[in-house]
Length: 121
Image (cartoon, rainbow, N blue to C red; front, side):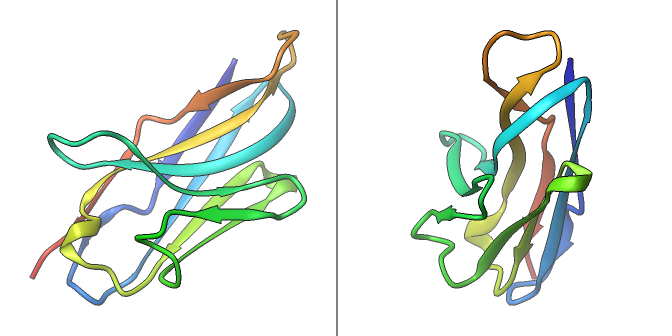
């Protein structure tokens, strides 16, 4: 019903920057919260950042001051600007959208397939 596709991942040196994008498509009635999660090998998936419909944001302590989440509501797209990257940021990054498809009676969370971010010298 709702499909999310991430892009912008890749290999970057420590101290470098990347900008991730995630576009939502399909029969969408509304989108409330958009966000990013990440999962490193052998570790649990963790929250990176969230942004609400009015622009309010929430960040994990580990990325505050380095990452910035933003959204283009008209395009159903969420972005994650990542600066001052370190090897600890290496993970698969997943896009998440809380909203409602046109055929659904309830809000729910949708997930993308993920994009790999590798920080290494």
